[in-house]
Structures are given as C-alpha cells and as structure tokens.
Image (cartoon, rainbow, N blue to C red):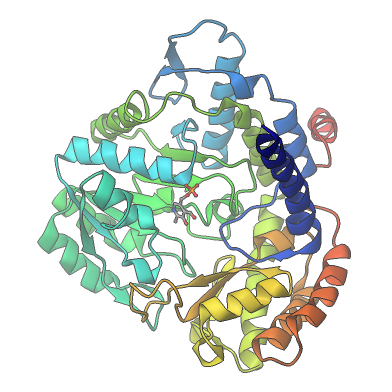
Length: 445
Ligand SMILES: Cc1ncc(COP(=O)(O)O)c(C=O)c1O
C-alpha cells in the first residue's frame, strides 16, 4: 500500500512541477500547441459539472442537437448549439460539428463518412515527409484503422507545396473518393482552388485539414478553404486556434451531394466513434471563438510576421531555413535544416536543455523512415506571439537559439537567459483576462 501512496505523491508532484516548468520557465515553439487566455482557462474551470456528463445522440443538418438519449440535457443542448453556432459564424459556414474530441477524431469521422458515401477506399494525400499528418497516411489512421489506400499528391520540394498540375494528373488517373489538403508541416496555402474542378471530374470530396492553421484562417491570414472549394474542413481546436483541446468539422450544406456527405459524416461521429464528447470544453471553445472574432486578425497577422522575421533572421545568420525565395512562410511555422549541426534530434535536445522547446521534423527530402533523427526542426510562433513577442523579441530569441545550435555557449548558460526572457512576457494578449471581462465587453458592444 505504501508504494501505491508513493506513486500518487509522485504524480501530484510531477503535475505541479510540470505547470511551473512548461508554463513559466520554458519558451514554447512547438507549432502544434496553442496557448489559452485566462478567460478560456477560467471557463474550463467553471464547466466541471459538464465535464462529468454525457450527451449521446443525433444532430440535425444545421449541426444542432436533434435527439439525445439521456435526461438532464436542458442546458447542455443549448451549450452545444451555441458553441456550434459560434464556430459556424466564425468560419462562415452552414454546418459544423464540435463533438469531436481531437483533430484525429475529426479526420476519422470525415474520412470514414466520405469513404462510405463514395464507396471508395482511395484517398489522395500529401506524402508524410512533405507535411501530411499521420492520420492521413497508410501507416496511420487512414490505412491501418480505416483501410484506406493512399495515393500521393505530387510535391514540389522547391516550392514547399503540392504541385497542382502533376497532382491533377494523379487525381484523374486514380479517381479517389477523397482528396486531402492541409498538414502538420504547412508553410504555404495548398492549391485547393486549382484542384477543385479536377476533384469534381472524378466525383471526389475535398477534405482540408486545418488543424495547424485554423486560427490563421479565422484571422484572415491564410487561405479560406471553404471559399476555395473544400467540401469539409477538419481541425483541432488548440493549435493556432487557442481553445481547449478538441476537434471540429465544418462544411456548407449546398446541395444534395453535400447533404448525403454530411449525413454520413454525422453517422461516423455518432454512433460510430463517440460516446462521451468531452462536453466540459464547449463553453471554453465558445470563449476562444469570441476572442478570435474580436482579436483574431491582429493575432494572426503578428503570428505570421513573427514567423517570417525568425526565418529571415536565422537565414541571414547562416541557418538553412527552407523556402527562402518565398519569404520562408505564410503560416505560423518555419522549417530549418540542421543536418550540418547534427540533425533534428540532437539540436532539439540541446535546445530543450536551454528551455527552448520545439520538435524535430522530417523534411520533404528526408527518408520517411528516418523519424528518429530527421534533418529538420519545425518552429512555431503562435505561443510567443500571444505572450506579446514582436519582431525584435523574436530576433533576441533567435540569437539564444543560435548560441545553442552553433555551440557558441553551453545550453545550461543559455537557459538562464531564456528564463529571464520568458519572465518579461507574463501576460496573454489578444484575449480576455476573465469571463467577466469578456461579458462586460459584450454588454458594451
Ligand atoms: C494536420 C494535423 N491533423 C490532425 C492532427 C491531430 O490532431 P489532434 O492532436 O488534435 O488529434 C494534427 C496534430 O498535430 C495535425 O498536425
């Protein structure tokens, strides 16, 4: 029994230490992690009863609650409907589903639903090393769970983008049920509008995975996939979209083709892949949507500016930042080849020792199986931007990174400067300090 108690003590202590370490002493540059405002965090804490509840059932074609199987739903249905409505309005579409508990779940439901409606198992995807998420790939959810067969988009390494002409030929030849866009290493808008007509020729649905760029889309700083011709947008709600961890799917109910597809995706959500939908996150999701409505344009603009400034500065100082001829990026991330300094794994670990947290990443020319020590780093700027970093602060941070990458100073020495820099940025910007502040703002609006 004593050992059992000891395990519990270790767990609580590690949790407390983690909060201090990652939230107060590190600078976070992981491109897939968002940062919540105090109001979003408070709303999560205020939703603890919801966090215990169930709301299984069907939704209608506006994404609203249609039928629930348990009692006690009086307010829960309102909460789900309002969260759905806020997301629909923010992303200007007629249907959304916020019951997905993650981006992976959103992809599962979209891919499953659309493979049922098209009766096709073929899906065109970006190669993994060129930025696709593992859920799109034959080696992950798409292949191993859903039994989908991948056909790869043609990828232009110089442009760091899908090659629209070559991919058009691939889509025409393969006649897939689904064509995907979007990804995890995602620097430039994908050619959705260029390939819309080709998808129509073969009867394929377009799924755009916006997990990384959803907040930038809300802020008008990235392509708007639904306006460019995507049928479905799948996403996480916790990367550049600074909400609670969760997922969402968006679409427009334009015609009977989309009605059939939405019904199949809804069936793939419930009953096929949900029971508990983690309802406690929905009020906080709505608060995050409100923040993006009010402050999302400025946040997205500064995030992209910061990423571009980092790309430029690191490049000027001799680092191999990809896509220099295109201004490095149009998103929140940049990609850097650090092979000459030992590779992605070694550099990410050295930076971790200096309290700069990021991840190693496969680059398009890497061997896909070399996930252990790929050439690259993926660096994301959404977290530091929300903490108030501007271009000059980004350059300071880049200097600290280069001290480590170029072996100019020991990581332990750099760590002191990283902690000092972090301590200068204690406020979360582009959001509300409390739920009350948000409500006051709304009353005055
Ligand atoms: C493009 C993309 N899609 C889907 C996912 C999966 O999202 P989640 O982690 O919310 O399951 C990720 C995760 O980083 C991603 O990058």
